[in-house]
Image 1 (cartoon, rainbow, N blue to C red):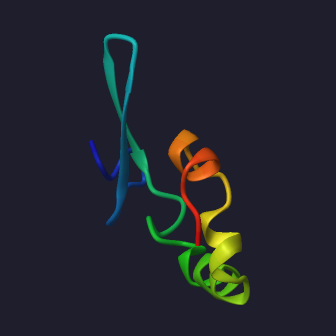
Image 2: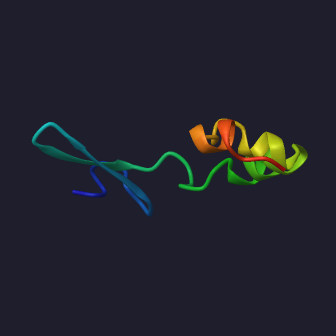
Length: 63
């Protein structure tokens, strides 16, 4: 069955409704990670923490 579907090494497995879908992987599961890490390293610590504040951080915390 795998040969019929041209599945050689890696597969993607996904649940759709009441079905389990197995299909050939088109790329590595970690494709693009290196570029994303490089982009993250170019910013400052403040850039990395953007969007993670909470009410305490905004109102009560002082540096």
